[in-house]
Length: 282
Image (tube, rainbow, N blue to C red; front, side, top):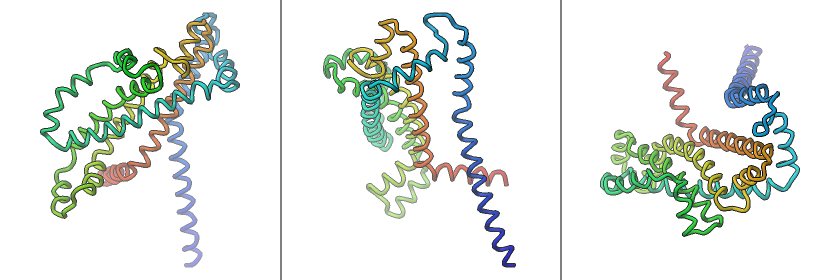
C-alpha cells in the first residue's frame, strides 16, 4: 500500500509536467509557425532576385546586423519610437476605459455623446497629423497625441459594449448584497467587461504601431518611421527593408507580450470557458 501511494503521486507529477511542456510546445508552434513559414517562403522566392527594389532576404538579414545591432540606432531610433507608442497607448487605455465605463453605465450619457463620438470616430487619425502639428508642434507631444487619437477608439467602443453586456443577474446580486461604489465598479463592471476591453487593447496596438510610424514620417529627426523614410530617400533600399523587418518583429513581440498579459489578467475567464467546455462534453 505504501509503495502504491508513493508511486502514484510521482506518476501524477510527471504527467502534469509532460502536459505543461506539451501545452507550451503547442503554444510556441501556434505562435511561430506561420511567421517562420512566411519567412521561409520569402527566402526561397527572393533568392534569385536581381531587382534593386526587392533584394534577397539573405542580403536583408546580412545588412540587418550592421544597420540596427552594431550601431546606435536601437537607442537613437527604436527606443524613442517605443516610448512614444507606450505613452500614447497607455493614455488611450486610461481615457478609453474611463470614458467607456461612464458611457456604458448611463444610458442618457450614451445617448447624448453617441452622435459626437460617431463623428469623431469617422475621422481617420492620419488626417489629424497636420492639425496636431499646428497645435502641438513637431515634438514628441504631437506624436503621442497621434497615437492616442487612433488607439482610444477601439478601447472606448469595446469598453462601452462590455459594460452594456454586464449580466443582469450579477447586477441584481450586487444590489441585494449592498455592493456599491468602487467595489461594484471594480469587481462587477470592470471585471465583466475585461474580455471586451482586452479585445480593444489588441486592436488598438496594431493601430498604434501604424500611427507611430506615420507620425515619424511627417516631422521627426529620429524614430523608426524617420529612419525608413530616410533610407528610401537616399535609395538605401536594403536598409529600408531592414527597418520594415524590424518594425514587423517589434509588432510581433508586442502582440505576444499583450497575449501573455491577457492570459494573466483573464485567467479566471479562460478557466470558466474551459470548465464550460468540459461540462458540455460530459
